[in-house]
Length: 307
Length: 133
Image (cartoon, rainbow over all chains, first blue to last red; front, side, top):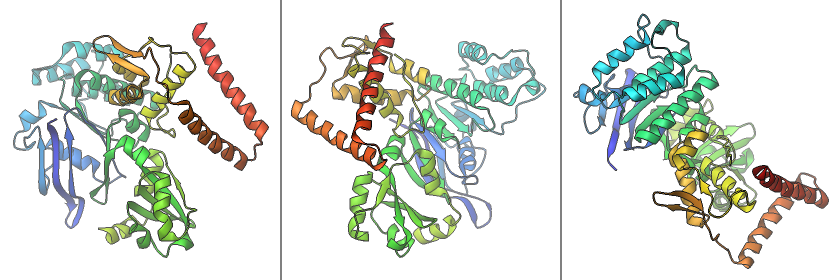
């Protein structure tokens, strides 16, 4: 499979000396779906804008279909679809006018798909954009992003601000696109159940770097959290040195340590280190795992130790 | 047959699908030779990625429960795999031990567990009746 999108050691700061992205590398293969996770301010939007050619990286390189999105903007954008939470559509136009404009821009525009999506979303061509609800406007944005059958779809928090029903409709349309076109999708989301539905791989950004890059099912099956009474380990570093440890932080009177490995196996691995076999290791849902990996206030201090 | 998935459940989605199909076969709600939805159709019904459904089907196929016939679709195998009885009994004993210890830790006694097993049996059978009616 060929690489559709490649981030190579991307560095980007908005304020000098405070990089939002500090050496981010990963790629998307043809037809691959990647969920981009991270806390607010982790750099998800920045990274997606760099892929769109809307921002330059200050260091490192980005390649979309093997091209540079800033040097070859037309060739790249013809094959990309993009929807973001804060996308601004021309309020004074009707849906028909906006679609007409996109048809003109994209020679590969699929009129059948356009009609299907309008029916499905129950949108009228004559409706003015500014009269649409937030959910409807996002649906129009999705329609404009996928009717030219893009090979890569970039979705920046596509469900943000939508009610659950509108979010579900958006997901349904994305799944159909996956079924029909096999497009690659990079999407950021705070709705972890949506991430599970769209599936594929997850990339977790934290402290300007990729903290986790792993198949979603592996995340669910091969990571677990060990809960260790505070007194059993002298400090976080002692636990961080244990093989397979991804992160340690203190919650109440317990260390919570995220390990790669199945619970039984991790428990055995910790036995010689802590001198006891009674270590509770559990698999946790994606949402809890996210909190275990990037939650808490002392993240900055910890990263100073581990990096 | 209707499947359900719970994105924040204990199991990854592909495992949830595997479990429900295996259970339907065990309860004879799906019989040898029955056709399953294509993985794309099921993906749209469940609103999950087609690759996730494909993974569940692939794993079930590797286990010998279902088979894909090129150009025709996916079917429940005419001959379901038979694990050696001894091996199967050993596995069931292990599951029973973990079920019982979980129950005893939460204060249930043996008879209460038996009742739970009977209820579960009834549920599997009821699922079967629902399909017939």
